[in-house]
Amino acid sequence: MYLIFTEDDGWHTNQLLEAFKNNNKDAETAKINKSSIIIDSEPRIIFEGKEVSLKEIDGAFVRGIPGGTLEEVCFHLDILHFLELHNITVYNNTVCIEKSVDKVRTSCILNANKIPTPNTYITSNIKDLKKFRNNFSGELCVCKPIFGSQGKGLEILDDDNVHPDYENLNNVYYLQEYLKHPDGKFADWRLFVINDKVVASMTREGSSWINNVANGALCKFFEPTDEMIKLAVDSSLALGMNYSGVDIMLSENGYTVTEVNSIPAWKGLQSVYEDKNVAEIIIKDFLRVCEENRIC
Image: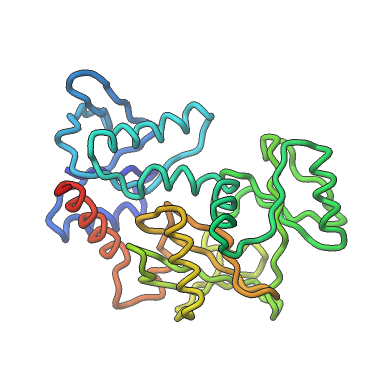
């Protein structure tokens, strides 16, 4: 049996269940924030009211991990570590999820691997925040929560909005330079990487600077350049991902990686492909990794 950790039973979950069915595999869904573990001579997990021995689980696919307190988030990740310690494949692997859900850590890793990413200033010190803000004098900067996705909690700081929403950011301030597209468009690219190969890509064009599908961006088919493909694959490798959604923007200084997602959505991406089933490609690779780990 395979587990799908998900926050809801929507489109993505249904796509995954269908892909498992097409590959003649049994899969069940579980909400990780409603799951429990038992650590004794017969390690077990409890989900959806069922108590299951880890010996019955062939692999776990992570589709969603909810936010929460530090303790809650740590426990959710501990469940994934618990499975991996018992030689159960977790996809994406737990360490890369830990790296990528934290924007600070992601920025550090991309920078250390010489992958172009926006200039970033991070602090929990108000004095340093004011100093960092002055570095952008006359220019816009973006303030982001270090945890979060789908454009939630993002702010532009400018002459009219000088200070970020302190409460929303839990006293950690992550400031990035605002990247202007040379043509003045609100556009970026999402490249989907599986097993170190770009398998699908799209352009996202929006009507505002928060440019993603959740905020109504228009998705269009796009054939990436060799430079973009290398950036996406290098970014995925740097964070040790099985699969990823890599976001790239074009600025006056060239292509820049803005996000590397370890639990990427693909509904918008699927909409630009008639002859390709993204969920099927993901699950085939997941099953490949599970099989390789069993042999090892």
